[in-house]
Image (cartoon, rainbow, N blue to C red; front, side):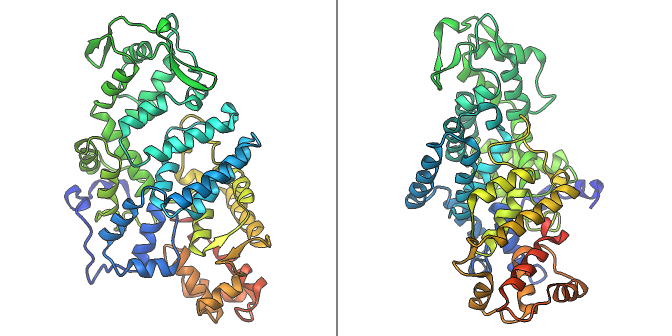
Length: 457
């Protein structure tokens, strides 16, 4: 698809709710696409259950599950607290991997991952595991809620303020760095504010500081004089300034573009005309994140060829998605370390802009790294599939032959069907005698996950 073609997408058609037809039925392929993008993936049984409902009903269910069930939350938080006792932020990543692998609230966790890249903060600089975990919980609690409230919370988050060198914003030396990043990276995008706005916004945040790892306001360091921000003048404080920033119309356009890239397509860039209805929905909802995501996930555009197979899986999507699609459990520490090796260490984004994503996820080194990580996981004796060795797992699903195993993996893991030649090569390469051959089944799974088709989401 060329950029010209992308710009020709009719916005009226694009954002209408998708209605299956005989030519475009609601089938496993579309259900798998929905679960990959709104979460990380689902096994075939889950996909078949989804087909008993309409696409809109499944999206509604994903949104209704936007709060973790209490028993799961207690277990996941207990694991995190145990890891926090070590004080090692690198080990903290495995606590998040546990949530990614087992959460019943996939959309909530997917959006939490989105916000981690948006409000990027790295443990390389913060170093305090507890503060990093508190920020992670903050992002999860606001992930599908009101954006302006999330911005205010993140602007007072100790980990963020440490990362952006804004632990003490003094009246005599306003911190323009934090003010600039809040507008450029978090809310409005480059080119949608003036240098004067940066200076005035920094003055609004004076007196905001971190003491004993807690946010507080130091009224002796607050600049109480009048400030001019986006053509408005007054003695604004930080909260009032955030309200003014989030009133700017470039906010909804900026975020609509980021959601499009995260949930719909890496490239080409969508036109402003195409994105405007999504942006309008966000503003009309009172900046409720769930509203535009509902519109997006139910749309013709989302279930069209403009979206399906138009993204390269991030390392998290690749590893967690593969494991979830096969009901697998494994060593979460190994997954966490592996994700960092192949370019998406949780709690370790590369810089304040987060991960670039798209084509940058894939190069010769990361492709080898993905294959090596999957080989490590499949070679680990603790890796189980619905509690079983992979050969026994497939037999429990009624998979009896190599061809049936390939078909199962194709429908679970791949966006596009394999050619007959590729299937033939797979059958030959693994030399599988039967699905009772555990080593052969693991070899087949490793070969399929190493295919270029398996890197596309």
